[in-house]
Image 1 (tube, rainbow, N blue to C red):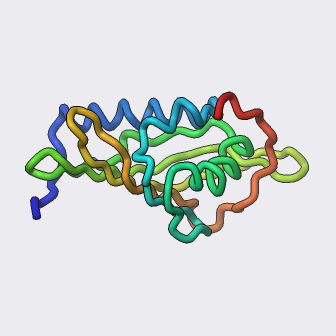
Image 2: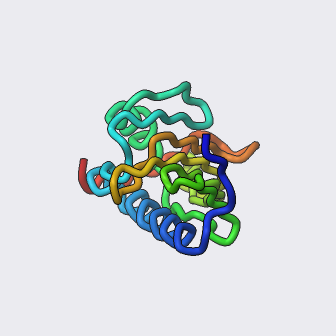
Length: 152
């Protein structure tokens, strides 16, 4: 097993850009653009979800219940940590995020959380193979916006 340590500046810069790209797809509710960032057999879970096997099931059981119902999703890059294996084949990203949720009456509320994502390198391409995104304690799970999905 190759030990993980704080990633160098180049790898950290790459994953900061990856997070910015992914966050923009969440804000745009663009599933089609986001899917290629993940391994088709990704394992994921969230605040109240058991392990979700596979990208298509993850889209249906989490993305589709969150992305259209929230807005302004962003990662806090200043607080993000990136770890990388010494062989360059594995990376772990730990990143807090923010978003806006909406009560049933339309009133907005802060909806912060955190993410841990595991990446594997396949040739020159990094794919996320595991994602855990969860809300901070005390944040309402339900949000009631109804934004259209840009692309499946």
